[in-house]
Amino acid sequence: MNSMLPQYSTKTFSQVYPDVENFVNDYQRFPWFTGEDAPFLHDNTIQILYWLLIARYANNPIANRDQNQFCFKLFAIVWQYGPTWEKKLDIQKQLRNIDFSNDDWLQGAKAIYNTALNPETAPSTASLEELQYINQQNTTNYKRSKFDALAILASLLDDSFTEEFIRRFRVCFKQFVAPEDPLLFVTEEDED
Image 1 (cartoon, helix red, strand yellow):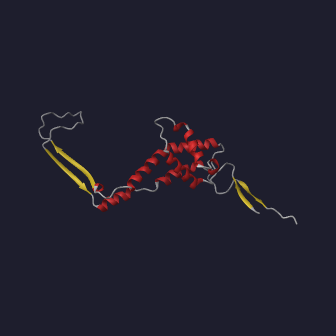
Image 2 (cartoon, one colour):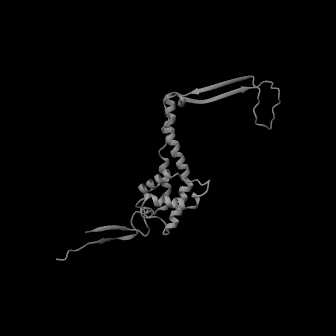
Image 3 (tube, helix red, strand yellow):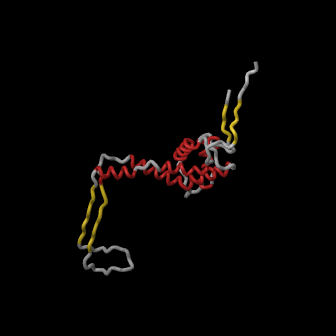
């Protein structure tokens, strides 16, 4: 029987986190998870992140010899970029679930132009407040065609932000093509 196993000087991602429970538990034990204002990910999102990282980096050896430093680096990236990624996931879900049964999605911007001639109060140059008195009001209401609205929706749909987020974790893993240690071949010989 011949076996060829690559030898790395550090563990792979799947060896550090063999299951989602270990990943979630480690995530929750780091200091940035605590406190009311902590920008933490929801349980479902952190589990999705684990499976995305496993899909991309399961057999990649970690860059740090110190496993704790690897975990700090990994979860620092999650803390820094994760909440924005989670919000973008939510926005994309809302965009994909737009109700096309009513015409609200066809509404465009609304512009209102007011003119005040000879108001009874003098305008202040230091204030940004609007005058309460108007002589004339013009409004402009825009309505999009269905094609324009769909084109805007299509331009808002984005499937690259998850790829961009997962790519940020590359710094946590070694960047080489071959194993560090020589490959070992084991051959069992039959004694006859």
